[in-house]
Image (cartoon, rainbow, N blue to C red; front, side, top):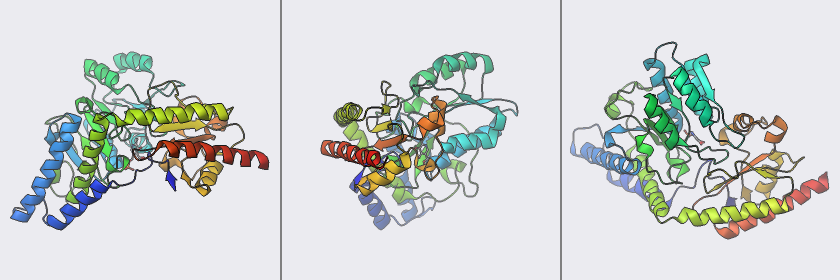
Length: 378
Ligand code: PLP
């Protein structure tokens, strides 16, 4: 099986598995316990916090460990629902992951105003600038990179505008972290991440919050994480997450992703040449180096692509893992102005740090073969 679904989840790195095993075998205590075994666990947790803070560029105390990005993102919405005045609006981009979209609607209902995106899948900065001046929302939420299209959002510019208007800025950086240089992310007020998108285990992530600020916990109980998230921290999977992130940071610092982007770009050029009628979403926009989000030619159903490519030995996806299983156009493509008929032709190929150039070439051949088969069947 050749794996082209890293945006859904990435294989767990050897270094992450080793870190997990090491902590599991050597550190038996609860980080909240006063004895020696507990202190060892607390030190491991503090080390992990420092490493992550250095990567993001924030204070270690600004980090709250969570069970993943879904929890981190729900926590942000829950916190602001408690904090803001009952009439204050919030701005949420129209292309957020369902865990931001649904939780914002759950807590804020009609007070959510969606920030539109252009046909190219980028947040409409003119809209945002004008409306920010007018409405002064209590929060602005825009993801750093979109999971379905890989299109990178101008989060640095948005942060600057939010700072000018003194509006808190929250970015879901799940798809960005571990794929792109993280520098500057720590300046955003709220940042969420999930280990399994960058080679760590599933079921662990974090939320970065503003320095010395209060966070209304989503989970109540013990006083872990400075009272910001109850529940015994899973030190071993946190250590595994940080081990994976450190590897990714080194690889990014060596610019390995730039060569991988060339392989992806070559694939796209060939793909468009041999598949007339296909489109690549946001092709001319800054995008994650690993993602190709394509509208396949007319008449091809995306579900068939996934199934047929799976049979041919390639794991690909119709978009976000959370929206698969139902043949509905994704809200991301609708927000970009695509009609349902177009959006139903979207297939996502998301490579990773282990994908080789021959694997991209093999994928292209398999696509051509499947396309041929589909056409024969009419
Ligand atoms: N945000 C984005 C952009 C994602 O891609 C995902 C997962 O697909 C999540 C949040 C949710 O992460 P998790 O399922 O690990 O909680």
